[in-house]
Amino acid sequence: MIRRPYFTLVAIAAIAAIAVSACSPSESPAPSGSPAASAGASPGSSPGATGALTTIRVQLPGPIDGEFAGLIAAQKLGYFTDENISVTLLPGDPNLATRTSAFYRPGATGPEITISDVTSVLAAREHSASDLVHIAQLFQRSGTVLLTWAKDDVKDTCGLIGKKIGIWAAPADVEVDATLATLSSCPLAGASNYTRVDIPPVATATQGATTAFLAHTVDAMQAFTYEQLAQVLEATNPATKQQYTPDDVVAMPLADRTATLQDAIFASAAWLQGTGHRDQAVNFVRAVVRGWVYCRDHEEDCVQFTLAATTGLGTSHTRWMINEVNALIWPSPDDIGTLDPIQWQQTVNLAKAAGVITKLPSIDAYDDTIVPEAIAILTGKDLAAVDYKKVPVAVAPGGK
Figure (cartoon, one colour):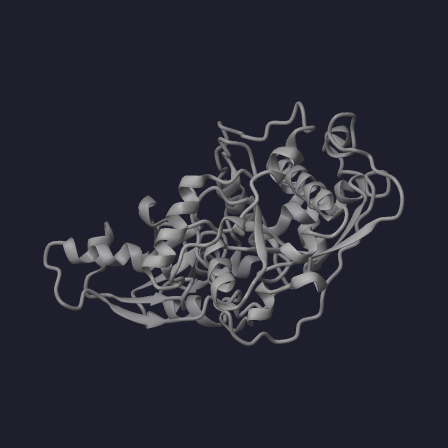
């Protein structure tokens, strides 16, 4: 049901923090055609706190883009100010392989909140003294796929035998390595089932994974549906001089049993212990939940919100990202934000089997009491969306 790996803990380039100012719904109304009543504060949907706003810094794993549209919407529509908080989004290093351990070790000085996959935080807690605590699970399924070219006729995992496969560095490779380990049971499997090519999962199509795949220096590559797959489809086929289409590329899902938990909300344990900070964490989660509910029901509004909050991203690429991320969050059968203990244990087991961690995490690695408290007053809102289905979205050349 849930998956996703992520990235390593090395040196991070200094990146300026981007604060996207929160404003109330009256200051920044929903676009025409979007019911402002469902977006703004309403009885039973937010506490309507008053007084000076408390600033919460949120460390993102990459650039401010469609992956975080729910947070951007929560700012734009005033959901954070409804909760008496102001949020500053801190973009992460787009070359995720150069991230330092400091990213995962905020302590009492912050940032207060971090968005990350679970595997990377488990590694940081054991090896880098991270104090991050899992407080809400956003992605309910994995965005990780293996891309191959349709012309190569790779119909299943066994078709990858003998191929060059572009794979991200540990711990981002846990899911893929676990999936490829099954090649040994395939017919014609040999001592060397595939050739691993290390590639960085950077966020631009001019570097790393996507370039290697487009240049055919690898036969397959690890990718996210909401990022690298879009980059491939936005590129031009040099043979035909036409944009690639979904018929040219196969996005092979990984096996459910190799799934790891991906985008989640973590809070610094040192910060949580401060007076009133746990309540602020509850308020933050509530606002983010409302933001993603809005982006589910008003996806095009969130495309425009995100474009206004980012630089250098095209409209079609942003639309693709938000559509794909919505499909990773929804349906949320146990309500958005809820941590599935079975998927948590599977993530732990896979990380341990891969050597990313050597021991089981302590019981304080997660707090599953914050989400129920956050969503308790969101009466009348569909927080499960069990009938949600992704809509078809196309990308323009270059993602414009």
